[in-house]
Image (tube, one colour):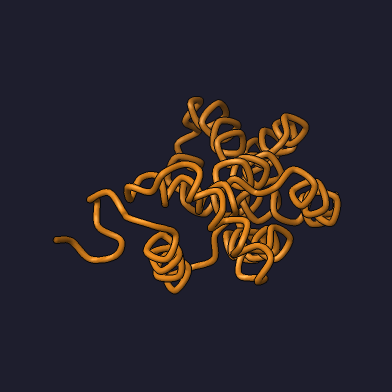
Length: 168
């Protein structure tokens, strides 16, 4: 017999609820994320739905609180932009309303500041390539920004910084 959150099929709402509490003891989850975890652990769909609803009523699953938690964690990653944040909120199954609220709170000034930090980081990391006038640096710099969720409007700024050797 496996523990209350083992892969073996769970019997009854009490066992699924205990498993959910164990899952929540490690970190906060969205309702959808909890539902997937419970199903993965062997809960029946109907019981898992009932448990998730119970957890919501008890305040143990709160979509807005979870969205804020995901956002605060993301803010620590200084080299990422708005599109990366959108992707992170989607990957973490943050409720659409809560995600929209978070994205609305992320200002253009914050995005610009993060883009500047990312560009400075990229240039510092590529000082030798800047000195040798490596032409691949332009496209690599633009890809660097795009891969980190920054808008294409930052590409000309990055290219200008590379041309002038700013940032190192």
